[in-house]
Amino acid sequence: MFTKAELIGALCTILAFLSAAQILLTGILSFAFPHFLSLSHCSMATAAGVISGLVAVPMIIQLKTAQISPVIELRYGYTKWYQVIAIVVCVSLHVVADIIALISVLLPRQWNDEFLNKMREYKVKKSSKSVIDNIQWALQCCGSVSYKDWYTVKWTKISERSTLVDIIRDTAGYSEATKEVNSVPFSCCARKILETCMHYDVSQYGTKTISVSGCSLKMQQTAQLILWSEFGVYAVCVLIEGIILFCLIRSGRATEEDSEFEWRKYFCRRSWTNMRTERCKLLLEQYENQ
Image (cartoon, rainbow, N blue to C red):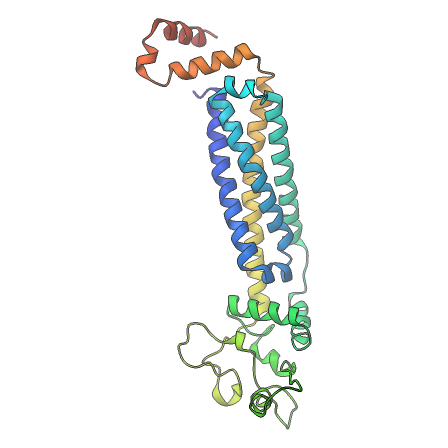
């Protein structure tokens, strides 16, 4: 059977690795896909995960150290109730992150309309252009429902400084008969195709070198995957922290004598040589009789 200190130490180890993985996951998402997180409303849940992980890891490591060497930590003021407060802070942050992730995944969204609105702003807003281009390139999609959505959006922009070549290139996709765009942005190009991407005059060159599936469904599926994954990680952290908190509260307030007894018992059980000494034998017998 594990002692209470050994159980808390083992749980702290698991929680430390889990919190480190949480920081890695949310950190990569925050730095690699900021535009997707902002448009899919995953940014708040991810940011909450980064904050809770950064707070939890050092606290958990110090808590594990306190279980291994209670006398030293007690002398530095890391008492049992200080440990309880630290775990309560970690639990609170993870609960908040869990609630944000759950609300984000259950909140109804008009994915198609939101993406179409960004597409309409593609020509006039650099921020919208950056968001659309990054999402289409990352998810390998084009348009909201289909690449043909770009046919109804005049996304090219002709400036006063444009050369004749630029004007011909940018207006090549406009059909005089329908006044619709017959081209898609470069971000619609397929990464796996090694040929030159023909994203202008799509009706003439075909869709071989561009992505044809829409972004709305892919965004919804990816956002739900991210949010449910974050919710699961945060929930497991809350569960482990709850068990640690329960063990700490049940153990009561540790006195210096109790901490010294735990430390000597741990030292005696570390090696067979120590266990054979008379002092350790007496200490272990006293522990078994408790």
